[in-house]
Amino acid sequence: MSESSLPEVVRIARDLIRIDTSNWGGGKANGEREAAEYVGAHLESLGLAPEYFEPIPRRTNVMARVPGRDRSRPALVVHGHLDVVPAMADDWSVDPFAGEIRDGMLWGRGAVDMKNMDAMILASVGDLLRAGEQPERDLVLAFFADEENGGVEGSALVVKDRPEWFAGATEAISEVGGYSITVDERRAYLLQVGEKALIWIRLVARGRAGHGSRLHPENALTKLSEAVAAIGRTRWPIRLTPTTEALLAGLSDLTGRSADDPDALAAAAGPAEAFLASTFRTTANPTVLQAGYKHNVIPERAEALIDVRTLPGTEDDVLAELQHIVGDDIEIEIVVRDIGMETPFRGDLVDAMVGALGRHDPGVPVIPYLLGAGTDNKALASIGITGYGFAPLQLPAELDFTGMFHGVDERVPVDSLSFGQRVLADLFRTC
Image (cartoon, rainbow, N blue to C red; front, side):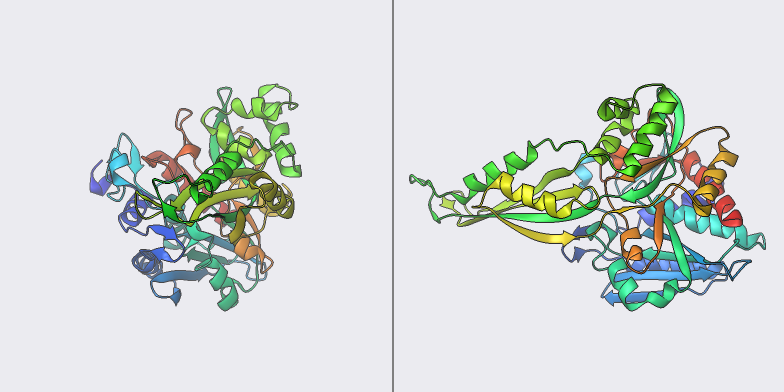
């Protein structure tokens, strides 16, 4: 596909992928400044007046307001994040930051999470403004830093120090919803109306330092390994919420299968199975081990990082259970903790999102679901804004889209980006 034939939405997504905004967390990041400046320049080209907020050097956020036809109505926040998780280039088939287009796909870190949606926002708003149109109501376009670190150096600071950016806004849309899955060879769309709570914890084991050759029962690494294995092997029980009950009802209607076995019903969704099954229960996954400094020295301290995602309202119970699992000898430190959320699958905005999908893919059902991860909607919730996941993509049945979040060879179909651009433009005209 030649440069001149590339749809604008694809060019924007490719350009953003080529800006390496890797975020390792804990304050270690390349920073979003260049990506924010790129977005700001595009907003200016549409006649908008972007504002920047950089509370920490290079951790840049950018916002612009698009006036709507009916300014008496509450504004809608449309937001994305500009950072990405790191990519180990040796594991990829392509350079993760080259923005390569191959086999009808745009490849690169951020193609799925979430420079694709950033590009769809910019391109769809451009469609309206260049045609001399206005959205139905004010749109607050916000692009945040640091989402991949829980937003602590991004959206959390924006809502604290720049709440005026969101004046008059009551609802928001962002990532990880509105995309299609294939269930028993039938397409359906998932609309995200809730998010599990995030608790990133650190396990700390202590022992006695000593020579690696000696008999040494007080080994911190041994204690830590046993604790990590115990957490990693724990199978948390299914515990349904109103949102996951609605998801199961929708999948049951689609397949004709019983909703009595949630995991079996999730399996009918093919590549999306693991993504959906994680929403029925707590997950607690070990992600990082840290200990030692020399082959023949037993360290005094060993640490592990665990990514815990709990159902809304169960956070304290889960922390107590984790302490029981690892035992009293292991200290649990909370690194980042945020909230879980659920919103009813009804209302004017929900109807508008369902309607927009229906106009571009008639007759295909839209099913609510609970996101097993989290988004910057949580920061907006702290100032009274209700958030949904709606980054619309019509996807091939065989593509493991959900498996590419933070995965290797992240990619999105070019045609899916154009579909999302059209659906979002339609939504903004009507919602």
